Image 1 (tube, rainbow, N blue to C red):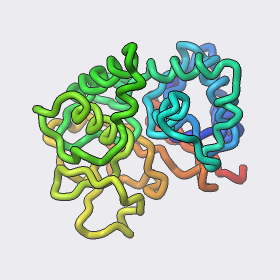
Image 2 (cartoon, rainbow, N blue to C red):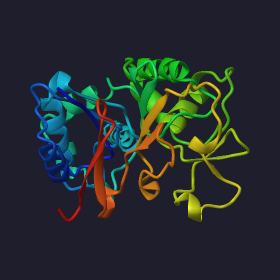
Image 3 (cartoon, helix red, strand yellow):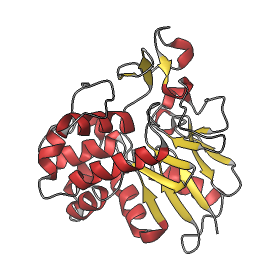
Image 4 (cartoon, rainbow, N blue to C red):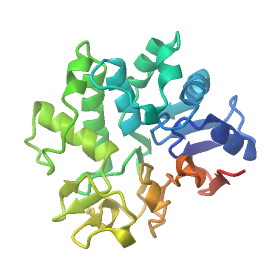
Length: 270
């Protein structure tokens, strides 16, 4: 029995199956967890969701920005772009089932007391327990009867700085951005949501979120995230496990086994 956490799949079902086959993944006994962005940009978003949904309790995921974008497209809040490659998924007879299944998923997931999975990472002022509480708050909105009205309010870059006093849609939007879009910070605690470069090519005024000290974390804490393809998993810190290694961009698809702490990857060309 093994638990695997996989990086951004983004509709690359063939690659996912190759990666799972490389470790002899057994859906009867093993569990798969994803860091979000299950779909979007890749050619097999429908096949990806069909398979992950079929795993039942042996699969879990946090939501990524592409997953939330799909919910907005389905709701008529946003228009799909050709580059999203979502036509087959949106036209499928089971699309409503997949949509409501996705909106039941959290923004952050605790594997244990010290291990957090989220799409973009952990905002430096938050503890793992606070992140789980904020994720639960957002999930309640996403699972409510008026969930689509909340989706309409998730777009935008403000507020860009966390305050415990944030309320209503400001609180919701900040959490969405921190959990699913964050890469860089400026002035230590302000989200900068435009730069996607590798840190070696980023403006000097920007700092990767994981390089800002978080006094809420212990030496045993582990943060597992995706979202940042240009980072290629290079955190230089064994507590920070980046799993987006750019498969959709012709590079690698990577997953991490919880029990042995090892990474497994396949190349796009494999």
